[in-house]
Length: 299
Image 1 (cartoon, rainbow, N blue to C red):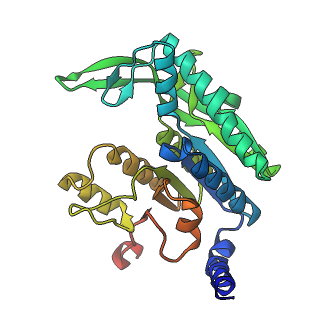
Image 2: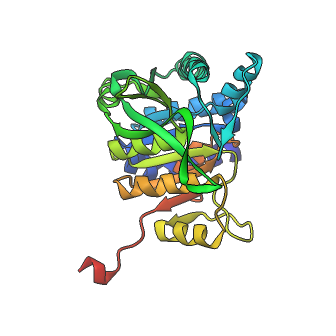
């Protein structure tokens, strides 16, 4: 009986959040260890379905770096990286597209649908959802020099019509982060970046990034449950936020600046991570939110 009562209390704790977020859009970047762990992938699919059932509009953007790397290795293609970006020549982009669109995207769609959802897989090339252009890497040895890293792209614009059409018909969009350039080329887009840009274009209620860490930690290794944009900038300047976390928090801050209400960086290694972050009072990761407006500014 006590277990049943505890479950009832959990449902009651979620109720105000369900009311608040009904009919709101959540853009969720699915990546990291959760993508290659069967139990975590199934947990994520059920979380997405739960969001949909309570009236939230989930939009999924997925990564696939490890799977792409594994396929390239199987094919005997040696990968070169510049500042963490995979140099993507014509042969590599074919493999990237095959893995992202033909394998990972369909696996996520199948898992959601097998659990009772209505997911539809697309890539950023479909309906010109993501318009991209060539991205260059900076040469660390010569700051004024740019390095050609192939068909790695940056987002020029988002045309969200295909997402809103799917949403209006009660489908869950699952998006592979590829973009099409005006030159007709296919470009590989960082999944965090793609998710942030899509969230901004949709004016989403939330941008949620699943990662392989607990969230954002401070200089002594303590998890910060809440941060503002100014907090993030100060922590980058002080070196508390470093490495691969920098582009993630910057992506979140850009999304907030362009109309997203709140961003979250959470640990995708936990089962039901999305539900725990959204529907519990404590949460599990780091939320990044707008700085409070002072009375002077408000006036």
